Length: 537
Image (tube, rainbow, N blue to C red):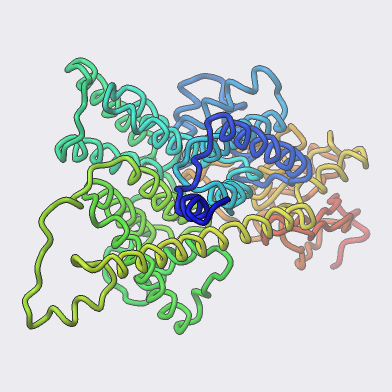
């Protein structure tokens, strides 16, 4: 090979992957996640938020009752309708896990096959904290949300021909969970802004207006379900427990959720003020970097800012949440970066020329105002490095969390239910408290449990006004009344019993404390009435 040929080869652009190669990559990656997901789900001990939704869907005896019950859950209907449908095929909670795995693999396929990122970036994304752990192993409605948003991104280029596909994706997203409802609202606004900024759509008038009203109806249905009844006590109730005043400490704590959602492996402590301030500053830097990356695409930047502010506003005002909740901040970033690959830009507009007074200072900033090619290349490297760090953090978080779930039970509920079955106690009269933690056992045992909080048999738990937390003395009184019709009672508590009662014989049976969820540890007792001779004077 001559020197000139070597130079031509060295300067030649990198070969773009062929569609067949990309399809093969996506198939292998989806199959691998499917295999690992099946193993992980078989070992995963489901907890109350998973099984309570299953019980709501399976124990509601009509569509009207299902809708009424779901309104106390604080989520839209899509996940519950899916569970109600799948339980007709297999009335076992594992059917929910199979459905959830299918939804998760749909997200993996879209990421691996269609995301406009480099192959190694897609690999890291797929093994990230949300796709590989939170929305893979824990069967919740968030899997529907991620799948719907990624479907929207995949169909984004089709908006030039028709808006129907992206409209359907928005309806699904809005009806998956409250966070995706907010994102769906901002994405709908982004579609309108995108059209005004120059995207040439060939969609017919009927297509445009039909898609618009479809999204509007979908948003209305979702909102009607999310807004709880007046007597709902979920998260303190809808009419109360809002923080509508400014508190600097709480504001900074909410702001740290940006860092915690982007960089999963290093989470600040909310109880340490230094951590809160430091990571709030880091969060602002991350936001500034994302804004700089999207600054030439007004529609996408508007989506990113409005979605991020909406989620942070909800986080501040109502619920600080856990990674599955504020993780939607990272999803917003992912969606924005995806859409930015096919959106109008302002890069050809005349550059803003700074005055000579400030020119020297401003040009020190990388590529904010018409800088040199060298600075532009440097800024692109900084952006690429920052995105790589975020992806590495996501992947490490996903691998660690997935591995931990194989070793540490998420809840002690499954082990407790298996023990009860082995002992032949599954048909006994069971009293369980706190009721919210007992929904896990009701789901695994496939039976109702007496809940002192509502003074009745039940399976799923709704945070209604009738439900009241009770002191142990009140539970003792109900046990006495129940023992008039029972020789003995199996009492299950999610805390260790330290109190005694002069008329009740309470014998400890077993304790199951190996649980990642702190209040899903279970303590079993056999309760009967003491003979009169054994009662203290």
